Length: 416
Image 1 (cartoon, rainbow, N blue to C red):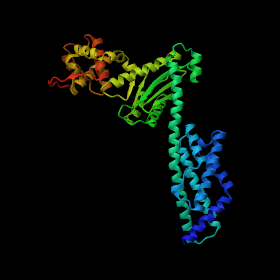
Image 2: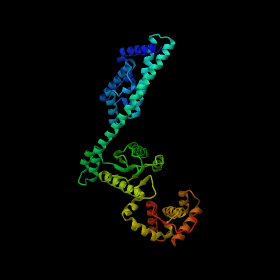
Image 3: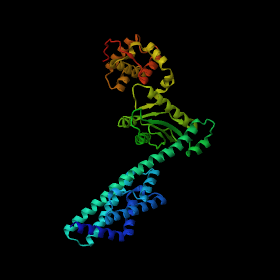
Image 4: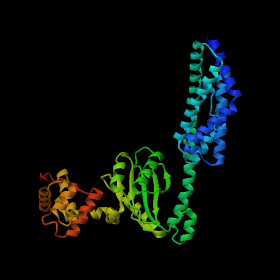
């Protein structure tokens, strides 16, 4: 029976080979119709046809010549197509989908050709099973190679193109003598717009991942509704600019929610700026925000420059800032959970312009709770929050941003 099956397999393969031009046309037409990425420029389409033809020929050889699967490699045309797919930024998923669709069409064609031989039911079943198994093993083997080729080329291509773009962007950022038309020509985009810069990174100790950084870029795009100009600096850092004719808006709540799904991702966002000067300033803002985020002992996934600008100006003098904050806040700087709750409440209360109702709404607690905590904070300060209000607000802010505290004294004050 095995000999009959092998003979039938070879005969089916020969019949497919005889009608290969028609199958190639049908298969490549199906790819173009069902997969958007395959409807690319003429050059890429020619490569797609060559790739498909080389895989069909290889599958026929596997069925007719008994080639060992250990000896299989990705056909050169298919390898080149995978590389070109990566260079054009087209998705690996689309490429793999084509292989599975092609596998299905080839199997259907094989069954049609087998039916024309009018074999017995037993032989038909055994031959179909054998062909399906061999084709599936071929596709699995080639897909493994295609994935490696695609991902290696994607990394190589990203590194090359981003290195060039990074050099151009740095020239625009640092070249104060560079005029607007020259900067626009260098970047290949208009700078006569509003800009919002972001720095996306993964902290030390986390796994290096271009894919994770790209996820952060997609989050930024979703939160602004705009596609950013991006520079993958390395496997841990990415720069991005959102540009638009109107001031870009950022959905902070949505962005924070998405970032929580990726705990090892961090993002710092600058303030909006207009034109070439704004392109530069918003990036400097984002760098400042990142600096505060890195210096802080309390890790935040999203840091907005608008919320940490003053802290950024004080960052280079942290020892002096710590000493000054302790003089201002005294025991309200103690490092324990209850005192931290008092500091948070005092910050919100001051930001709410002394409104207990507004502060309670922001903190989702009862107004009496805010009143109690404010009173306890004032007891630790030794005066009302309104006294030396600016100093108190700044001291509370730097404690919050940089995680500056002093060891608990051992006293147990209940914060409520």
